[in-house]
Amino acid sequence: MSVIPNSADYVRLIRSGDTRLMTRALARLDDVQIAALIDPLEAREQDSILHLLAIERRSEVLASMRYEVAAQVIGRLAPEEAARLLGNLESDDVADILGQIDKEQLRPILARLDDADAKELEELLAYPEDSAGGIMSLDVARIHEDVTIAEATRMLQQESEKLPGSVFYIYVVDEQERLVGVVSLRKLVISKPDQPIHAIMETELVYVSVETHQEKVAELASRYDLVAIPVVDDQRRLLGAVTIDDIVDVLREEATEDILKMAGAGGELVGTRGFRASFRARMPWLLTSACGGLVVAVSLKGFEESLSVVPALALFMPVVAGMGGNVGTQSSTIMVRGLAVGFVETSRFGSLVLREVGLGATMGVIYGAGIALLAPLVGATSRDPLGLGLVIMFGMIGSMMIAATVGAAVPLLLHRLSIDPAVATGPFVTTSVDILGLLFYFWLATMLLQVPL
Image (cartoon, rainbow, N blue to C red):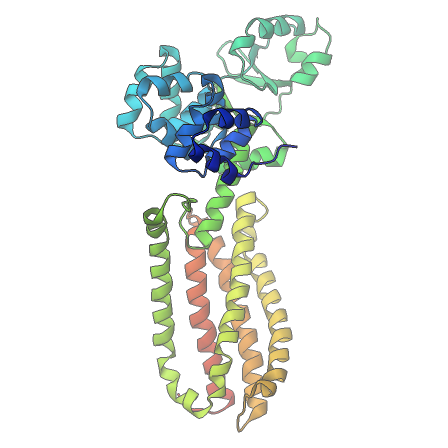
């Protein structure tokens, strides 16, 4: 089993200037290990390691790196050297790397590539980066439906150099290059040589158009247990395929994006890009949270006299707000992730929200009663201890029910409006739960303890 190496040891080797020892150390690592080693390093250290590798291996390492980092490496090279490195990679990997590069740097690199390769790359780069067209590979194994198994095998052998590195399926097309079927490599091998391809091909196809969002592509691959999905145009002509390596990248990218957005840390993992990039990503979300906190303070301003009459109410404000916030975060996280992986359907809006509200009420009863019983032990005193206990218990129940409602409903509503539910879920849920939960808590106090507003 390959283990990601400790970069600190290799950084010390680089800084020691002992290139011979460093070269011997790199020889013990595979391409993926070297890529993992290089990814978090400074630009100068990345370049030092890459220049110790043969150019063919340098290309493979580049393809194994994160595309954003690989693009930074390419951007530091002369156009001739960049074109030479990229010329050894598959078109989809090159497109993913070049898609991160400025147009001013892109043109001279494309000009130095082979004309056919440059044309393919321009075609791929014309599609949106997060679409099936943007992540597909143009290199696919295709045969016509009127050939036999023996003829198909011979054709694939003759064109072996043009085939992608990993062939999972052979796609069957008609005279107009329209996708009509698919044959797995296993089925092709075990079938009789004189059988026609159309006799063994699968005609119930799972395919996507070039405009399909990458998240939908990954969802289909996951649902149908596919390692590649064909991509077609509006005439169903076969253009390429999205393969398993890109599908895994999409799943990881989309999951990371959702997690970061829900945490209010932007949409990309920018932790290694320096102080300024991290500041720009987090500042707007923290500003939203700060404004939400001010709204909470203004909303509670009218209850100052209630607090002066029953100071014990202030002791349990953090508990009521905190428990409500936790329930809201749980509900919203479940909904956002369920929507992302296709386990949650907005058509079940009512039943989903009711389920979360029921869970919030049940947990509110349990924790509300427990905290109310423990209130005297933490020094909470009142002229009406029973009333205070009821305010705490029902305030907790109400806060957690409100939180569950907001946490479940907001992502579903945003999804129905074609807005990414992860974008607004975090700040919106936190602020609204704090405001509504605490307002309900103090309203109960005015009702049950007869304290003034």
